[in-house]
Amino acid sequence: MPDTALVWLRRDLRLTDNPALHHALESCERVVPVYIHAPDEEAPWQPGGASRWWLHHALCALADDLAARGSRLIVTRGPSLDALRRMIRATGAGRCLWNRLYDPATIARDTAVKQALREDGVPCESFNGSLLLEPWQVKTTAGEPYRVFTPYWRRCEPLLGELDAPLPAPDALPPLSELPGSIDPLPVGALELLPAIPWDTGLKETWRPGEAGARERLATFLSGPVQRYGEGREHPAESGTSSLSPHLHWGEIGPRQIVAAVRARGLSDNDDARHFIRELGWRDFSHQLLYHFPHTPLEPLDPKFAEFPWRDDPDGALLAAWQRGRTGIPIVDAGMRQLWQVGWMHNRVRMIVSSLLTKNLRLPWQSGARWFWDTLVDADLANNTQGWQWSAGSGADAAPYFRIFNPVRQGERYDPEGAYVRRWCPELGDLPGTLIHQPWAAKPAVLARIGLRLGPGDRDHYPLPIVDLKQSRVEALSAFDRIKQRGD
Image (cartoon, rainbow, N blue to C red; front, side, top):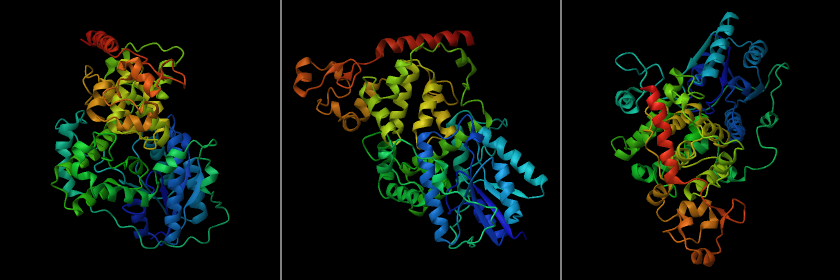
């Protein structure tokens, strides 16, 4: 039995239900947990600003959890293969274990690392630590990957009963008080993940990165909101969702743990709880698509959309107005401001803002995906890609292109009192509910009475809409007809 194993931690920053850590503890007397910072190996999808903020705090939390069990987190810089070889030489490690990732760049990197270390004589083993079912486990009867979610989930859901129980966190870990002098661990702060200019106040007030924060979020959700998840998840002013997405992305909680927690509360047959588990299935579905179609973060899955006539925005004014929450369309602006301030946006609003960008503004979905990538604390390549391709109509199981959300109607339906808009667009707070989603319809006397000025997009005015919703819908459908005819 090898004396020492390296556990290479990446997006599995937890101790509970961590297969690589569990197997290392079962097979070796000493375990060295290592995090290697090598963002360029994920190019062109290195973590964005909000993700880096989360990663800093998640690593600090994990380091504390390891220390509380007698171990420590070894933080170093890449390249990953070089760092692993240094660690193996210094510790005499006889095994290297990790949990799998499924992004194209990390698959290529991990494959090369595994081959090189095995050639060095070091056994390597990887595990599923982040999905319910892996991308190659579920295929159509023709042996192809699913492109439509409903039949995919119909095939997957019965398999959930076969999932292994989550692995417990170790009560204690082998001590790492003494390390060879050739190992010089870095403090997490040396990775310079936090912003130089402090824009993260809203993130600090909203989130608690780390495994304990993930458990707390799940317990809060299962104690109440899950009971009306099917309806509550649609209303952005309510706390109707789990908000677990960033914890899932960084592996501070695993999907098996969530399924097990739902069962432990006797909710397996509850329709709302099943709807919630279905969303975990959508996450798996997105990873399946990325695995089988690795070009999709940059290119449409439906090839005819490569010829889509996107609008010319030469000075970037339309994109900038959308990014800054200055479109003049309240629910869109509220969502974009929520994103900027807390690094997250309600899913219903994500669909609304992406529909406006890709259909009314007719700007490329890749521009929206890039902005989300930099500003979301839950920026996940599989989910981000699938969400944007769905909204643009170019992906698997995509929304029909003619489904163009009317943001006014969406706001009136899902934020009927305007509570969400009033929170994130406080300058509109005194508008009556009948006008909160279309302030341009207010009479001058109403605007004067509440001191609201509409007009140019400066800070003294709330902007008028940057696009005519009706006319832009007509233009979007016309643009789609052009590529459809080419495809036919």
